[in-house]
Structure formats: C-alpha cells, structure tokens
Length: 576
Image (cartoon, rainbow, N blue to C red):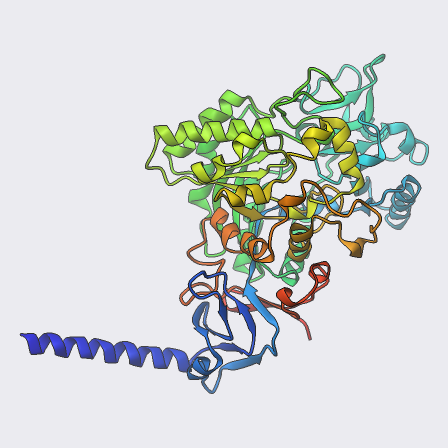
C-alpha cells in the first residue's frame, strides 16, 4: 500500500513536470532583460516574463525564461525598459467621449476660448448645434457664465459648452429658447440641479448647473444620437490602450441610458474590437428611481461576458464645490449658512446601501464634500453591522475634502478611497476653491491620499476623464507624476503657479502611486485575483514603458512613452 502511494506521488510529480515543460515550450511571448515591477509583494522585481495564451506562465530571471522559449515563441528584448501590469482605471467615463466632440475650451483666456468656439463653428457649418468642452470655472465669478457673451457672436444658432468637470454647461439664448427653458420653467432639482437665474426677472442666465438640468437640455436639443455615441466610444478606446490602460471601471453617464451603452460594448466585443475589459455600473442620479439596487442586479445578470460585466451601483451623492453642490461640514465661506444639498435624499441612499449590502452588491459613490464622505461612511458602517457576512465592496470616489476624524475610517470599514491624482495641482481654480470653501478647508482637507494610506487604507487612482479640475487627461502617467509631486504638469506650459499643492505631506511615493493604478484599482473592479499584478496564472495584461520610472526625475514621468500594451495576451498597442 505504501509503495503504491509512493508510486502515485512520483507519477504525479512527473506528470506535473512534463506539463510544465510542454507549457513552457509553447509560450507565445517571452519578454527578457527588463526592469519588471510586478506589484507582487512576494516577488516585487523580475528580469523576464512569459505569456501563454491569455495567461502569465512565468515571472523570474532571464535564465529561467529560456525554458519557456519554443520555436514559435516571440522573444522581445526589453533592453532595460520598464514592464508593469497594465494600468487599471478605477473611475473613468468612456461613454462620455461624446461630450468632447466640439471645440477644446481648455484655456485661461476668454478671447482665446471664444476664438476656438468661432473656429469650430466655421469648420462645422452643418452642425445644428455649436459644441465645446472644457471651460474652466476660474474664468467666471461664482455666479457662473452668462448667455449674453455668446449671444453677441451666435445670436441665431444654439450653443452648448460643457464645463471641464462635466457638471455644468454654458449656453446661449437660442439654446434656452429651443429647450423651452424660461422664467417659469421649473428647475429639475432646486438648489442642486438648476438653471441659474437673474434675481430680478428669474430669467435663466445661461449657466446650467448639474447633470439633471444638463440632461433635460440634451434631450430637448437632441444633442446625442446612438451613432454619435458609438463612434465616439470606438474612437477613444484605442487611445486608452495607447496610454497603457487595459481595464476600466465605467462610472456611467447621466445623459443616456446605461443599458444602451453596454449594448454598444457587447457589439464591439463580438466584433473583436473591444481593446480593454470594462466593469460597468448602474448610474443613479435621480431620486425617482427608488430601487436602484434591483436595476443594478438586473444589469449584472444580463451583462457578464469575458470583457464586460456590471460591477457596482454608482451613486451620485453630491456635486462639486465650484457649483456649491458639494455637501460640506463647515458652511461655504462665500455663502454663510449654506452647506450644500445632496443630489439624492440621504435617507434614500442609506436604504440603497443597506439593500446593496444585503445582496452582496458593490457601491461606488460620487463623494466630493467632506460631509458627503462622512454620510457615505456612516451608511456603510450601519449596513456592515446589519449584514456582517456580506461580500459587498464600497468605493468613495473623488473625496476632494476629508475631515480628520474620517481619515482612519477607510481602513476600518475597508472602503476604498478613489481619487484623480492629476487634479492635485496648485492651478487657478484652486484659488477659487479657497474663496468658496475657505482657506482652512481648501488647504487642510484637500486630496488626503497619503493620510489614508498611512492609516492602512486603500487608495485607487482613476482620471475621471473627460471630467477634470483644470486639464482633462486619461493618461495614467500624468496622474502618477502629479501624485508624487503635487505640482502642475510642465508639459502644459504652466510653470508659474505655486510649486506644491498643500498639504505638502500628502505627496506619495512612486511605488504607492503605481500600486494605486494597478492592484488596488483592480480591487475596485473586483478583479484583483485576475489582474493588477504580474503573477503566474493571472491574465496577461501588461504595459511596457521606454524608461524605468524609478531612474528618472519625477518631472519626466508624464513624458515617458508607452512602447507596448497587452490585454489578455493580445497586443493592443505598440510603437514601431
């Protein structure tokens, strides 16, 4: 009996060894001589990696990789270049690519902005609506832009210009007229999403605040069509690949139905044209939807292919400080006695989080103000006490302002702090932010990523593209550079601002930033067992950079070129 057992053991060892040798000899790709950073604590660095099909089959030394080279293996000499897990976007809006169709309004000059709008209108005479994206709040007073400026140039054609954060729009009189928006027209959600009014006449001024009001005008102007949306998505996704992105959490869009967008992704996957894997969400910004968890569960059941799944309920809890729609613990400095109002009733959100916890559904909340983040954490804490065995994961997105007492709660409650690191720069809008919320809040509570990390919390990066604070970018390397410097990117020509954004001690290390853009971002997507680090058996999602980021100046990170991106063992981008 003992001999039989020993024989079986040796037979098993032989079979395993034989299988490994055969597997190794059939590797499709072997990358050698690289500065490979695995984001795997047990094996942080390597020289070589082998790819077989969709999976990583080896991570280790150059010599060890030789066993994985067969006659058909493509061997790539990295020559010291950096190889990382593919970047994982923990919060982005690919379906909002349509919003960027139009004039690029990212400038601090009003003369230049209007010139760009005029140039776009002249170049697109057949467009029924003059469009643009990216105007910055620092160009206007806290009461927002006005229609008269646009009316002088465009009296007879509707103009719809979307702000840099996507949370408001600047329109002319013709656009308001065609949408039926006048003095007696009700606001979608008074005080939260509304049409800014002249205090004497109640006439709309031309500033459209927050997504419900924007959505109303989009619908009436018929600014979006399925074909335009699909074409914009098809155009942007390869650019994500060129930036090194292999997976993304689609944080949704208010202006079109979630299911329609997901159908577009399904079709692209069937055609073999989906270059990244997507974890989508049900976007909840309307209180008339009283049971968003049921809708999330229905979408989760319907969409669950290899490259597309629904992973969370996205909650629009509040807005932003520029529009006074972020909910704050301390009153707004420029509006005494005003703290902001929630986009959806707090009690309704608490009920949704409780039901999500009961049904093992993840939540992902737009949580901008410090009071909103506290309310979200409170709701999660209550839900976890009620359902201690739930597998739900929760993510607070943006967390622009964070009070001291709430910093350690991220680790305590296992809530991920999701943020857009490239926003953490001392740009002109930050001066306006200080005026709105007060210096003590703006420069003490702002973007406290290192504080959360030091207390054991998890931080995940995602650009929120196309939304931004000052510069719209989906480039992970842009965000990583800002995270380790809190300085504005020199490549945008802005070298005259305050050197470092306070609090200065919120700067993080390069390794922390890389983990936030790979493994910890993968956790938000629920895919950390499959992607986010380079380990045998995980999916072959990688990015190759021309230089080792550890060996260059921090100011050169964003200018480092992406040489190759691979998703699921398939090259999705490569430079010649």
